[in-house]
Length: 261
Image 1 (tube, rainbow, N blue to C red):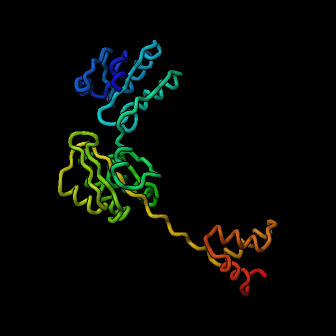
Image 2: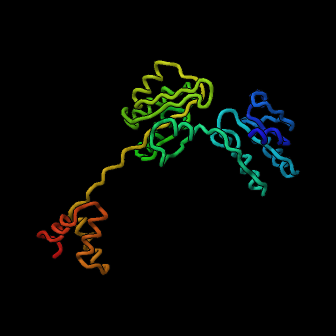
Image 3: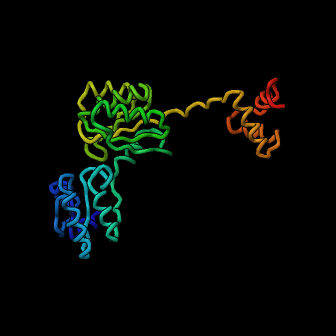
């Protein structure tokens, strides 16, 4: 990262003042031209930066507190550069998504990132309803002034006992991680006044209990397997395994009065 900032021909920064402070703290001199690149001007500035890249210059993109292009400026420029056949690489830096996931204490083997959910209550609750059965650990971003309302909606949609973590100001001076069930976190946020950049990590839903098919459906599946050329023994074994039912139970159903004989 130090070399990338020091050697780039152009540095596109979400906040040029913070970039100058970062360079000072790192003890490096940014020799290249510094330009602003943020949500309000990225549509206009992207073609300019792509032209700069076409001319053979090296452009470094840096954002304030997260990973460029992940809910931060950057995706538009990366896509435009790739479409123009220009090379793109990444100098790995802090990412709130994986940092919060690691700190949360929740399962990390499978997770999904939803970014910022809709701001309005009705739209947010509708989106949460579609996520309530998601079994992977869920990572979200939220603004501090909407945190209490978001946690209340999460508790209502997912259950107040669902484990979660609020991660605040990650990798910064006032980093804080609060790990509690959603209901308790909603009360904590409502009683306090959390500040800074917020990342939420929520445990996935427990696996849905398998629903055993009706006897008639099990008989029909065995019959269909037999019609396809399976022996009855193999058909019973296959249907039992598919539905997590004991073979002897499926056998008894098939051979019960009124079943296939």
